Structures are given as C-alpha cells and as structure tokens.
Amino acid sequence: MTGRSTAGAVTRALAEVHAEVGVLSAGEIVSYIPRLALADPTLFGVAMASTEGHRYQAGDADVAFTLQSVSKPFVYALALADRGVDEVSRWLRTEPSGEAFNAISLDRATGRPANPMINAGAICATALVAGDDAAERYERIRAVLSAFAGRDLDIDPEVYASEAATGDRNRALAYLMKAADALPGEVDDSVDTYFRQCSIRATASDLAVMAATLGNGGVNPVTGVRVVAEPVAVAVLSVLATCGMYDASGDWLVRVGLPAKSGVSGGIIAVSPGRFGVAAFSPPLDTTGNSVRGVAALREVSSRFGLHLMHATTAAPTVRTDGAAGDTLRRIARHDAERTAVARAGDRVRLVGAQGRLDFTSAERVVHALTAPTPPPTWIVLDLSRVRHLDPVAATMLRRTLAELTAAGHRAAVVGHQHLPPAERFVTAEAALAWCLAGLVEFDATSD
Ligand code: GLN
Image (cartoon, rainbow, N blue to C red):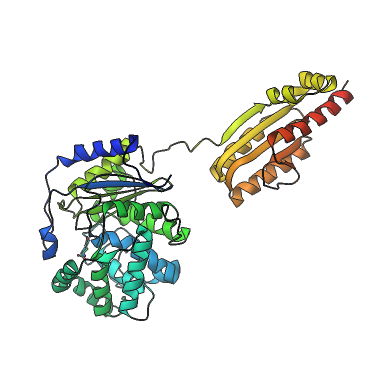
C-alpha cells in the first residue's frame, strides 16, 4: 500500500512523539534572513515515509517552509550525478569541519571547502551542477528536488529576496573560494542559484519522502521514479552521517545514529537506510542552528523505533523452512516402494526455502542451512520461489554451494525461476520433492 495513512500503530506512535516533544519551548527563530524571522514559532510537524512508500505524519506536516540547508544534500546528489565522484571531490572535501554552517572552513593550501553541507561547500556544489547558465542550473535543481519529493516544488520569492538582500557572508565565502581558484563557477551566479535553492519550499511530509528516496538507493518509494543512481545516494548519506549536523555531527551520530540534515528555517531530515525517511519542522533553533523540537523529535523516533545505525538488528527472516520435508513426502508417496523409501530414508531429503531479497547477508544464512552436515546422498531442495531479487553475489554463493554439494555426492534441486546449475530446476516444491522421492526409491532399493 502506498499513500498517506492516518490511522494505525505507526501514526499513533508518531503522534505520541509529537505530543511529547511539542511541549519544548526553547530556541530562537533565525533572524539574519529577515523574512524567516516572521515564522510562527508554534508550528511543529513530524512525518515519516518508509522505503516501501508508506507515509505517516503528525502535527503541521503539511505546512510549507523554505528548505534552506536541507536542500544541500539533494543538490550535492545532483552535482555527483552530473560530474561523478572523482570530479566533485577535486573541488570539495568530505571531512567534518567541526565548525558552524557559515564558517570559513576552507583548506589553507587549496581553498577547498571542508564538505558540501556547510555553506561554502554547498555553494561550490551548486556551481558544479550542469547547465549552460544560472537559470538552467536552477531549473535542474528545482526539478531534481521535485523528483525527490514526488511533486512539483516552487520557490518562496519573498524569502529568496530577503536572503539575496542580506547574504553578504555567503558572497564573501564565494569570493574567498574564487580567489583560491576553488569555485567552479562565477560568484554572483553561484551564490544567486544557492539562494534560490535554499528558498524552495516543501512540507515535512515532502521532506520525509525526499529522505526516504535517499534511504531507498535513489528511487522515490512513492512514485517509483529513480532520481539518482544508488552509489550517489550512498555517497550523500555517508557525508550526512559525518557532516550533516555541522559542529554537532559527532554528538548526533552517538545519540541519534542516523544521517541527517537541518536547515535554519527549522526543517530537519534523517535517513534510516533501507527503512525510513524521517522529517520534522519547527522554527525555533538551538545555538548550533538546528531546530530544537526537530532534533528532539528525531532523537525520540530513532530511539523508540530502534533505528540507530550502529544498533545491530536482525534482518528479516530469510530461511523459511529448514529440515526434512517428511510430511510432503508421506503425502505424495503413492505406492509401497515409495512409502517404504520414505519411512526408511525420508530424512535424506532436506527442504530449504528462502524469501525476500537475497543479498550477501541473507545468502550466508541460506548457505549455512544448505550445508548442515548430512550423509551423502541427501536430496537437497532449495526453494527460491518466494525470493524477489537475487543479488549477483548471492547467486554466485548459491551456485558454488550447490556445486559443492553435488560434488560431495548429494542431489540438488532448485525451485523457482533461477537457473543454478548443476541443480535440477522445478517450478513447484512439490514437483521437486516428487523428483527426490523417485531418487529415494532407487537409493533404498540399491542399499538393501
Ligand atoms: N540559506 C541559508 C544560508 O546560507 C542556509 C543556512 C542553513 O540553513 N543552515 O545562510
């Protein structure tokens, strides 16, 4: 199911987080961009989107606000997609700066910014976006942000005008980079495009989908559209993990344990790779420039839902059935010879079923189940009919295991679409077990 859910356990849990965190009243609304100072301090929304496209929200999650620095990871993604990792890293380092978002964190020797999440690095990333002129670059940025969100996003012209009128510090950063030959574009164009991208507006609900797209390998889980290649999404999340929260990044990784990005308008996103995108919006900020309620909400979501990256959770069960397929064999045995064979040697048949996506981790479990010690010959049926996707590394592991098993004198069969020679292939588990039964009768007859 995709789309917004309003009922259910997840929504209730999110509503509890919202209610608990909503009582916090600390923080100051940003004022160096005058237009942002007009924000309503009581606004507070939380939203989540799963990598399957399920959406949940609580509070003011449909109120649009300007992305500000939350735009940075998505524009960095576009720069990586346009130029490739090697070219981008010629211009941009990916080291935590340990400084504020607007600090002059430029390498002394080269002038290169510390990372693409601080302002200097973000302006550099913006300049790396492909396009013949500033207008085209901005339009490509707006389009990619919209694809991440799954709907057409637009600019808040008043916030843009307000930042353009007061953004001298960002201009200064761009001039410093330019002077060191470390800006891949013109100062005015790069800074103006950066101001525009910061003024694109979205809701917390949009941001949750944008975050979930990063956590889903670059495919928007709601629209199904691939926005960026998987290695790009992985690179962006890696930078967010170390640099997303400016000088609070280390503490954030310890306490919350999720790649995250905040902005001075009060938005914040966090990504639980392969699971969820989470977002919050509340304008009052702490002294590091992060939303007070947003930080608290994401911290609570992470701990309640056990999403800390370093928390070793067990993956979804992979091995569905493991052991003798006695019941089925007894049921399909039609005559005496078969029934005797099943009674005497039925434990020489083993059925291992797997489900879901088979990657290295899950394939390791299947291989472990397949290779449990057993006297040759054992008839081993690997049921892959409920496997959705077989990664190449997993396919190789299974093929090798099946080859080892047959070399050791066992008989192997695979159920499903996958062709994994030397195993026999069957469409149903029952057909495979009938094949086992025929072999078992022959074996039983010769071992008398
Ligand atoms: N547009 C803002 C600036 O450049 C973004 C900063 C932020 O959100 N941390 O100052």
